[in-house]
Length: 166
Image (tube, rainbow, N blue to C red; front, side):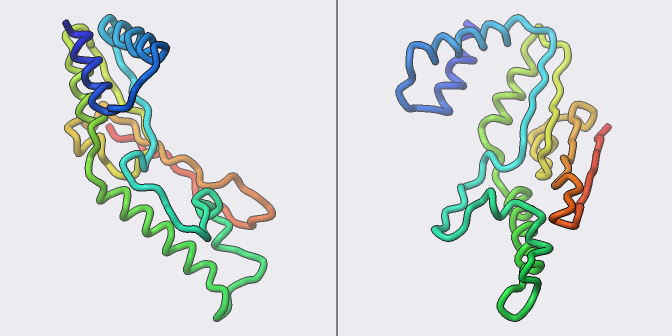
């Protein structure tokens, strides 16, 4: 009856009506989970956060290092660098103070299934949620992806980084 537990976890996340095709996919995923030796979870930051809902602002246009260097420059009317720093500081604060969502406990339960010998997290999360949810340091590889590729038009590279938690 392990399938029922895996299936209940998925159903608990989404109480909406699901299609027959979706149910088949869930059953196949459950079967794979129940017969695997290892699980690699991948994730990114922000899944538990509310969406940016502002009529004049678009998240994808705001999530760019170009704010640190705009053609109009910085002035009393256009303080672009401060806007960029404020936005990125807001995001970092939102990520690190967010409440852990149900997915972390589901992943932890799956990693403790009797046949699973190895379980790991590969993540770009900056929030530390994998560790906060009980994963051991050696099970989590945190990769900070580059914010931008060196772009002559932007004139700035915010940073590249690779943080490996052992």
